[in-house]
Every structure is written in structure tokens, then in C-alpha cells.
Length: 241
Length: 85
Image (cartoon, rainbow over all chains, first blue to last red; front, side):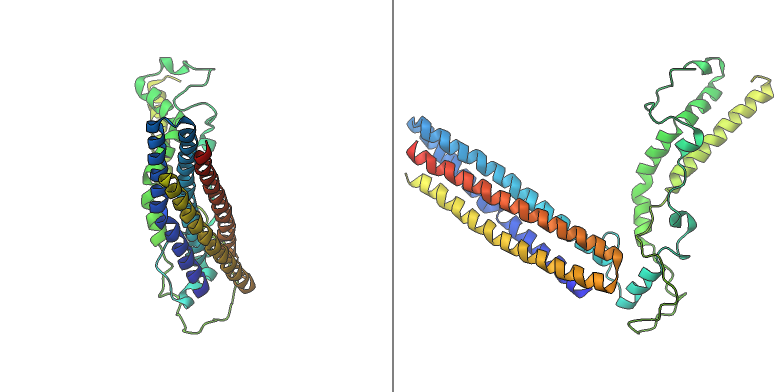
């Protein structure tokens, strides 16, 4: 959308202007500092106090300037998000862009991305997340004491799988975010006619991509469950409960 | 004292620059409103929401710019006061 592009460019220019006055802000502060120092030297206490007050104000002004620069940058990103969907991306041809808008959220997206959040590993396992990581609940705190180490390890892994899963998700998230951003619907499935307004045969829910479940986290939970199952299997085989 | 006047005039230059930037941000905000209206007429909701957020953000920028101008005014006042202290 051309006018949105222009807007993003204008905000960028505004931000540049704010960036460029950093130099003169610094110069003003330095001038005030030198003046205050000279006054101290000359023993003009009252004058020095006032000028030092000016220095403080100018420091705060510099901080405000930096904040403004960041705020303008944020506004620019928001306009870019409006243009491109989520985050930065290569500008698309207009017909492809409209096609993506219509198709977004339908059968071109894998089901686990389409349907939103599944129950977390914590909820499935009944793990109480109000208990801190690696803390045990007060009751049955030492119930595992009599089990063999492998079983204790599996029990502990099951209890803490929520945190483990979260850690793995955090680590692998950048990779998946990159993959997700690079994912485009297959272009050769639908013929792109070079007409500006293809007839709308269906209306797609035009929402932003639903948040996806990080598969690495789910793999971790599955691995932990398998370990616990194996531990139980071993215990039963040995005749203990 | 010459150096106090130098301080005051450099603060004035900053105030001038901040005032110009404020006018620029105001014009950006108006441009954002125009684009937002166009998007709403086209019925593109997602982009409309994002742009509405951008417009609010620009409003925030205007507020920050005004606060910056005021801060410079206070600095100027303190510098001026040092002449008579």
C-alpha cells in the first residue's frame, strides 16, 4: 500500500531528525558543565548551583531525546507491521498480497498453527506451576525416597518437565520464528491472474497468524513421558509398586 | 558572562530543533490518520489495527516531544538564573 509506505518513510525521517540533534544536545550540556566549573573556580557558589541545575536538566533532556527516538522507531515498525503482516518481510506483489490475506488461516496452514494453543504439558501432567522450579510440594516431599534412582529421576523429570519444556522452547524459538516467517503458501497451487480484484469465492477469517506450538517443547514432554513409563515398567517388572 | 550566554543560546537552538520536530511528528500523525481511514474503507482489519496502534504511538511521541521542550525550558531558566544568583 503506497501511502502506508510513504508514512513509514516519513516516520523514519522524523526519527533521523531526532537522532541528529543528539550532537547539539551534548554540546549544550558540555557548555553548561564548563560554565559551572568556571563559576566554582571563581568561588561564585550561587551561580554555580544554578548552572549545575541546568546541567542536570540538560542530562534529563538528552534522556528524553533518546526515548523519543525509540518511540518513533516503534511507530515506524508498527506501520511496517501494517504493511507486511507480521514483522519485516520482502514486499509482495499486490495480487499475491491480497491472495495471502484471503488464504491466511485456512487450509494452507497446518492444523496445529490454525487452532491455537493446545493444553500445555503442565496442564496435562497436573503439575502445579505455583510451586517453583525444582521445588517439591510440601506433601509427599520425600515419597520418592524409596524408589531406585532411575525412577526418581523419571519422576523428577515428569514434575519438572514444564520448566524443561519452557527452556527448550526458548532456545529453539528463534529457529522456528525464522522458519515461520519464511513460510509462504505454495504459489503454484493457485494460478495468479494479473487482475487487481479476483472474485472472492470465499471469505477467510482475516486474522493474524495464530501463535504456534513449538514442536521442540512437545518432543521434550513426550520424551519425559516415555522415560517415566519405562521407569514404571521396570518397577512393575521387579514386583514393586 | 559570555559562557552563560553561550549556554543559553545553545539551549535555544535545541528548543528550536525540538519545535520543528514536533511539527513534523504532528504531520506524520495526520498522515497516519489518512492512511487509517483508507484502510478502514477497504475493510482490511488487521492492517487497520496495526496502523491504529502506530497512530497512538505517534500521539505518544508528540507528548514526549512536548515534555522535551518543557525540560529544555527549565534548563534555560536555570542557566538564566545563574546570571543573577
